[in-house]
Image 1: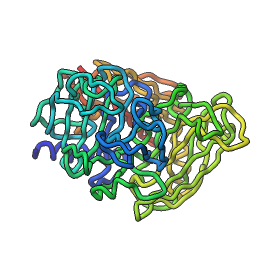
Image 2 (image 1 turned 60 degrees about the vertical axis):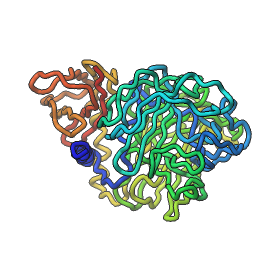
Image 3 (image 1 turned 90 degrees about the vertical axis):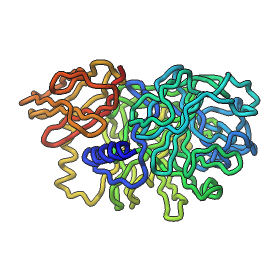
Image 4 (image 1 turned 120 degrees about the vertical axis):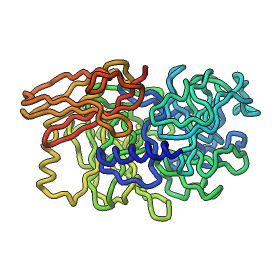
Length: 477
């Protein structure tokens, strides 16, 4: 346990140096709990029911994390995944291919790892698919993470310490499941399943305009638990996309990726939305800016919801209409607001557009938060930081090599450094007097002495005198 706490301390110090984040107990989840594809995160299909999150009790009402209430088609399997699914659900379901590696999202201690009887009855009256594979981790901060529907064999045993990025096992459809997915659940205060007074909370927080009913059960509060920064793009911890039937991915926009969904003016037809949540070190006045890619048939009536948590754990919600056909391939100012520190504000964008607007598509891309207290000279520096751009890593996860492109618009020395999950520098490279243009870098997973590195999470940083960028790479042997 002492070693676990020591390793966790080193991880936190490393994040502090890279992202300028101050830590308390939360947020603490460092990565998504699965091996992500190279260009995105997996969407959430079924969400946590804030009305009463326990799978054995259904009250015909499903309350979503943004305060939307559904009272029809809320029982699995007839509910709409990503929208109104499902009544009594105590976690979130990530839709992903069968046998995807399931990873520890933070350091932890295995307190449960076995195949046991599934829920009785299964939600929606479905037939169970054998015994359910379950893993539970204790994170040493009163939070417990739960992983359901795992395939045999499990990769960990009770009593083991795990580090961020360690493989726990592989997802499947064991127990009360039809399709392959991961049921990911966070319990606060206790790791037990309780069908009367559940311990479950939502790791994606609560963003409704009224008090979260979960607080009335055990006085537990749903907080955004994912470590993020003040600039959030696709694949980052501060971004989450929810399942819909007509998402389109594009390799253009900020950092060469963006998403699009068909626009609608009818709320009943809405099937696509995403959320961005930053971590702000200090409270203060911030410019909130969104990146608009140059995509075809963009709407001129996209509606961004800016949500700010109040002291009493309710939220203030402001809707802002933005024309996505102007100032493309740039950040546009959405609004300027006084914001609290920590992960206490969010941006939600849906496929619903302003009445009377034109354009067929809503585009989802990066959002950033700039403190207005930054001096004008610092603002100029921020603008000049576009002289160095690091593009997505590929493949990721990788074995044994990983590559990326970077673009420099200023002749300068380029420094590339690789750290392990404990913040230890394992290798470094210098590209002296790098010429203006696009360049390619390939790294083989060995340290500076040529020794092969073990599986785990690594951080690749690239910098010049004006900018430092960092991306996460998962090595799996």
